[in-house]
Image (cartoon, rainbow, N blue to C red; front, side, top):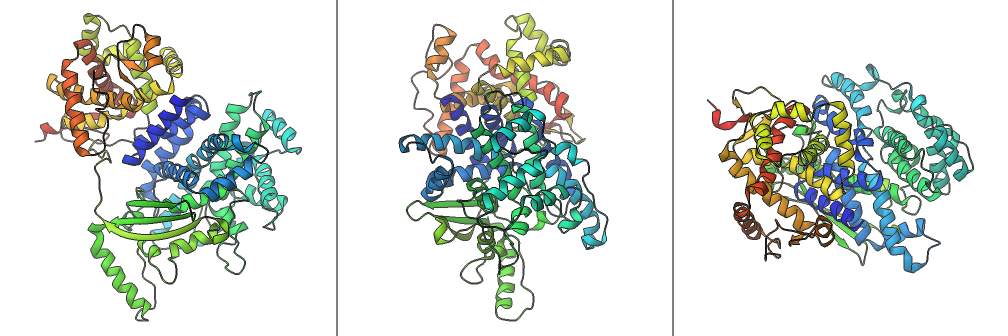
Length: 629
């Protein structure tokens, strides 16, 4: 379990350095393997979100990334829990009243990791339901037409999907002492039970309200609520995992429902129906004590507005922060967030500020807008950005969490962003990893077999790999690996774009006037090999491995020692700055040259396999930029 936790921790660190979607995938994968079981059984819920956003969101007027956004939300929530005693104590009091104080901290931290991860990482998986609706509306909004005057899409047949399976229904009936026929009834009951002391809403009314959301968006100002679908879809997926689980505890069920209702509440449902977000006379923001997971999701979802890819036509022209710095004062429970805007946009900012000053002085009737920058300009004691958050969640002195919002400008730093010419949705990291692992299991120990694979890998690939029976067996072999080795295979697949960039190549699904690459040259492999060896070393150092010569495989795993690590250089991966990083890369490259050919092949052969895999699964072609006419 410690190794799995370290896998997740390292994955999160990689993502926070880059913010890239492939690194976000690592976090999803680690979490799902740790808490849901085998990734392949539930993979579609996050892969579908990535596919819809990448391929369909450019047709919308407004839309920004939610795939990487959700991982940022996850990380921010972890930071708040770790550094804000008031929220941490609220969470412990909500879930662990009966435990001895000596036991609470570790149990609460493990509990929070599981159910905050469930809440944050999957709170936007329902967007594939909302995006087609918005695409229809965008068709008319190009001409500035109002939604109420135009056709709209609706989702019908949800009653079949919201129906609770008999196995789960019996478990819920035993726990809640109430029979729920569908998720609308379950969610309504749980929310009302939590909120009845503060808000006036009945189970029947809320249940009807929920059931009408998919089929009657005209009742909700012509908007489709992705949060409703996120909660409903995740319940269905969790039911598939847990339906025949005889050890599923009452506590686990209740906590899963808490995560689901937190997801359900995070968008329009809570803001408009329950908290009366737009009516200051009756607005009542949520207190953390009522629903800690919902409270934290709402606050993190609002705060996480930096480094989000803009897909929509209008969104691409708006000004959004590219970075954010958080400062946590655990004594006063103050969180200060400073949002940074691109200094290259100073002309746009200067023009806005001049117009804003005119408006303040009465020289202009309409308040100027520069989203999201304008929302962070103070018009009184606070800015609109903070004022909006305060209408949703309680950030008063009594709540324990106080927010301070600042803004600044700086140059965009892209050092670790891993942006290369190669472009793809790259949905098939899991598939690549499965086959890369299998290639290690094939008999490539003799030179003839290696030569056959290298000379015509396309034919070899289809003969040895591509059949339904073999693919199913390969997935079984991959599932049997530890999480550490699964992530290692995924890391190899992710590194492919970077290695192509280093040899002046790229992959794309677009036709280009360049020579297609079907085989790496010796010169190419001489560049790729040291890079892959450096990646392997980095991965192992971060997981606690060091040099050693174990007598047998079990000793290697127990002591975490490997003969291909760098001998006598245990501190080589103590990287704190660019100079340390450069020194490590040079040492790793030199160490690669000293390896035997069989060891070097372990670094180059997987990249040769990727030439074929990427064509098979992503429909891409690899081109050499050196062939440009």
